[in-house]
Image (cartoon, rainbow, N blue to C red; front, side, top):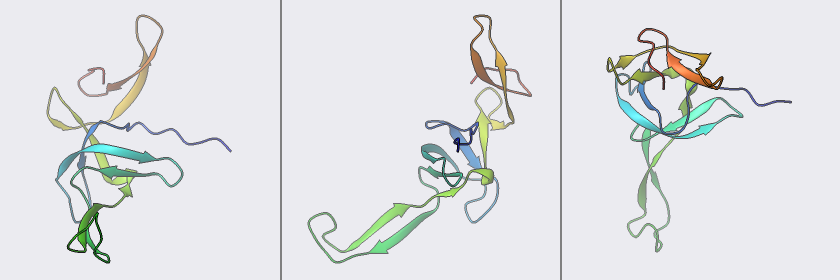
Length: 106
């Protein structure tokens, strides 16, 4: 079985469009292809408690959980707004991502 392809990659700037963190922006840290989820820096942060040890001296630590890839939208840097993505061939014949509204290449 082949892995699905997503238009959002690690390092992209995204905005959350639904859920408890709606409207917040962050950078994609990890894309999990198996279940169509991503980890975004500073989004969906929870506090976990563990037995105190050398990594967590007080026992509590904060962690970013995964969110569904459909709940985020990529931000177009030229307009600074959420935008849809498409694919096209550039002059060299290489496949590139571009923003459909502005036409800028990602």
